Length: 118
Image (cartoon, one colour):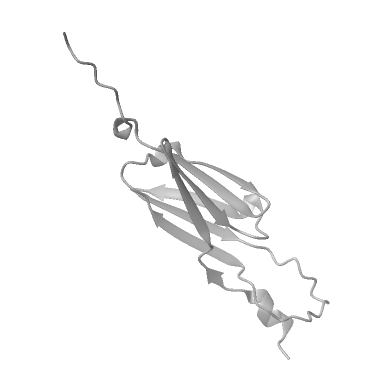
């Protein structure tokens, strides 16, 4: 039988995520089940976005689990972002275990209408 202390150590894994591109930029949905807002760190450097999160163990030490499946306690994800996106415009929201990150395109990469001179 697996010791519950071994399970509480946890491990680190890359979370599952999906991207949705649109005319103004991109939305990234990242699955972070059981993670509190205060336990998420989002940083950017050059054209890379890094997300680090820690899930606290909600299991009481006196509990004996029937299903001894180990769940990750740490998540790390590093994404290289296209140069058309402006990381300075990054915004994020965590709701029900899903982190939604939005990044807008750089102003100079947006389509512009060019007028024809007379």
